[in-house]
Structures are given as structure tokens and as C-alpha cells.
Image (cartoon, rainbow, N blue to C red):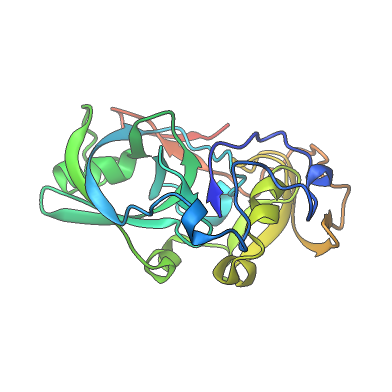
Length: 231
């Protein structure tokens, strides 16, 4: 049940029970075949000020100021990490794969450096020494803002992730699909979709790129602390 970077343009129709992407392993895979799980470690964390999720996690349904972009593969129920530095800690949702750096939201990085939000006391810099550890998903529950408390995915673009993780007990009970096309919630419809077979069923045409303005996602711009609309 491991993920790596997934294309935001993956078609939902391409997902089937017999053809999961090779970057995932199914729930029936043997433990011996899976890479060893790294429960904690020392890293350098760097600031990331532009929200995106190649896994299809919707930014309008989570706290985008508390996310991580990790180079290591993660499990379907292993998306919450605690990062500590300078005597402070933040819990983060791992919602994307990085090319090698341990990136975290600019606001989270700023808090670890200064103890204050980037909107109040923006600072600049590179990697800072930190430690991280896997923590239960319950410790990231307050970072999920979707009305039912479930982790929301794009039905048009997030089906590779969802289709590969449905065999996981936590994931199967704690995900929801929306007919929103982009992870920044700029196109689509703010409506819940259901799965029939392997295909999402939504009130409007799946993946329609109608402009969506009711679910804005904001970035905190690096160095200035000003808000800008994510795109």
C-alpha cells in the first residue's frame, strides 16, 4: 500500500481491481515483499509555499498549512507525521511525493523556526535540522476540514490513489470523493461522488471543468506572509 508521485491527469476510468498502478502494493501483498517501514528519523525540512497534491487530495478540505511532501513511500494509513525542531512540533498530512527534499508547508516551517505563523512573522531560509516520526492518523484528524471528517480526494484525478488503497481498513472507512478537478479546488463541483464498481458517480459530469469559486485555497507566500489564491 505504498504510493509515489501520481499524475493529476490520471483518468478514473483507468482504475480497475485487476490493474492497479505499480507504485502501489495491494492489501494482500506479503510483508516480506514490502520495504521496511521507517518509523522515525532525523531530516532537514525545507519550506514549501505552493499547495498541490499529485495524489488528488483536495486542498479545500484540509489545512494546507500543515502538509508534508515526502520523498519516502508511505502507506495508505500512514499519512500523518510529527515533525519537531527547536523545541516545537507540528503534525502534518503527507499528501504528495517530493523529488528528494523533505518539504513542509511554509507556515509549518516558519512556526518551527520562529514559533509564530508565517502570516505574523514571515522569515526566510533553507533546510533546518528536525526529527520526524510516524503517528496515528487520529493525531491529524484536526487537519481534515471535510464536513464528515474524511480525507477528500478528487474523483476525476485521484482514483489511482483511492483504487490502490481501498483494501486498507482505515482508508476504506475514512476517504470521500468529490467531483472537483484540481487539488487547488479551482474547477469542478463541490459535490460528493459515490463508487459504483470502480467508477465514481457524481451529480454532474465527472471531470467537468466548470470554474469553482466557493472553495478557495490560499497559499502563504514565501517571505512576505501575504495570502494568494492557489492555482
